[in-house]
Image (cartoon, rainbow, N blue to C red):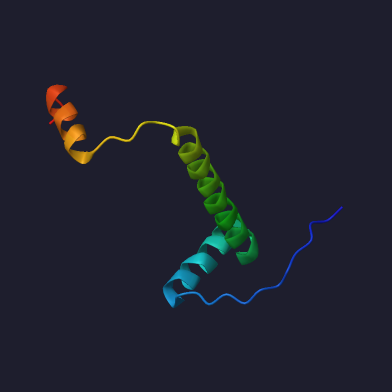
Length: 77
């Protein structure tokens, strides 16, 4: 079974488009595949960030001043 696709118009910076075309030729991939892969990677990174925030949501907050004091005490600054 094939993957459903949707056509979209995207405006790219001229230099970015040139670099993307060159990469497509060098890697024997289509522009669409390169763009789709980049978008998927970006969304996966966002999902990881959201998961990390959710894991730490219940951690106690610490003020900037307290953090500086802790770093000094630990010899990190």
